[in-house]
Length: 287
Image (cartoon, rainbow, N blue to C red; front, top):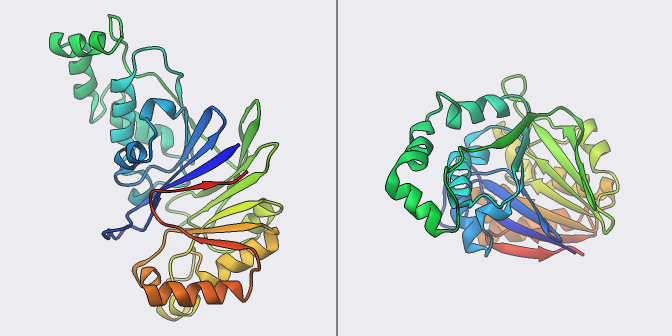
């Protein structure tokens, strides 16, 4: 069984209904989070999940709308732990290890926080009352910078990374392909339509794709390079042979009722499968 929770379906520009990017894919007992944009931890709890249930976090890239809630998630997951949870495994393109060290490492921006919680008697009391034991351990996270290829393999699923095309050379960007016996989910991340993405998405059942704006608008205003618009999202899904296309990272023009109607009509003229216009706090049963 696989369930996809859409926590963040927006962009760097906040709106009343969307802000930033984050998804959780539940595969039986395993919960895989992809990106950790603004307010992800809060949205996670609203979706009926809990930070300590997330054992795997995958970053597509390190724009703030994809990672701004990372310190909150790290600290909250550690703080709520009583020592019986699995170790958190974090994967992402280059700079993921560096960012993590700068947050909670020996000289990290939030190290003063967890050190106070480890040592202050009242914080120790809270930890014991939750079921933990003393001495309270420091955060222990497995963080790995990854390149295209196999990222992690576990019983029942595997994750492969592919090169995305976004804002190189300033930031590296990855897409992720999750393979299970029941089906395959492809998280394109922020990317333009490029050969590496077409190849990596081939045969996926479900595509989760950035859809920033109408293609004509993006091509006329200069915002098309390194990002997917309506037609590119449709072409990606058609080339992959996917049965479901999930549109996320939706910009303000596309999110209006008129924009949505036009987008769905344009996409349906190219791609014949199911199209889901991503709404935050939506859960999709995939198989």
